Image (cartoon, rainbow, N blue to C red; front, side, top):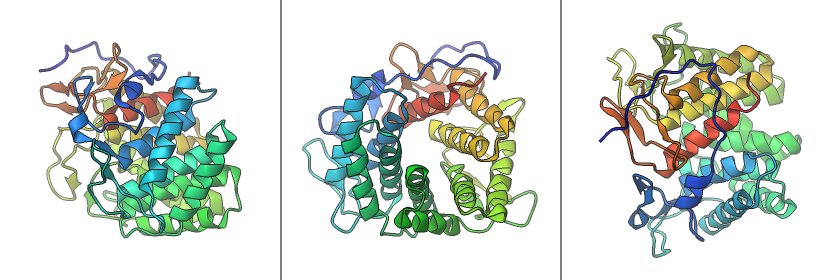
Length: 346
């Protein structure tokens, strides 16, 4: 089942305001449900720290948030507090019966939890939320993950903390270690990437390197991150629009699949483009944000909208037949995050 195609917009089209309506629909008094069938939460699939943490990121980013968004942020912070153990690791999966189905660990969910906590510590309008988030971040920041992506997500949380606490030692060390964990880019102009495979949320890797270079005043590190991001941006521009790496990834020297494209990839590129614009003062990076917005509005390989204006939900993936009409947490969070970056762009 697919949505009807819409006219392909230009990247100059006005972006709609981000809506938290579907995130509220997916959220109960415990946390955010991971999956949905169309716009209805699939409670039997439970909750995950990965999505709750990203929910805290977008809720904390809202300028002058209404009471409904503040309540979401409080719920997500409470969930993360319950998920964290005494060593700073996190559980990821909570069943609908409120029982954890995994042991605390240091996977992507740990990194994203620190990203959410760092963002709340830096941006929440509520003092008590900022204070609690900073305490939880400090505990989690004592740990290190063997996964470069988990480290990148955690490093983005550290960069947020350093916005308001520029001398925080735990955040400073974590951001530097995250950039190191990403690795050195390849020497080939055709593949200046630290690994031989592009996987998911790829733009988070150069983004954390850019943030680390900027914070440390390290021009070489900053240039390294910008080089990686420029290449990633350019290879995902096809026929004048954004065509992101699909869920299957892309192995160097192998054929690149076209579908299934995931909203998380678009949101990561929007995040990194916005960071590059902020750090360098180069407004041309805003074009990347506009292209990401346009992807959701229909300027993509299928020429179809990737969100539902009636619900505020984002569709779960772009397939050869159009969008997957399920509106799960990850895709909706990606939509909201991308639209937040579009504010203020002409």
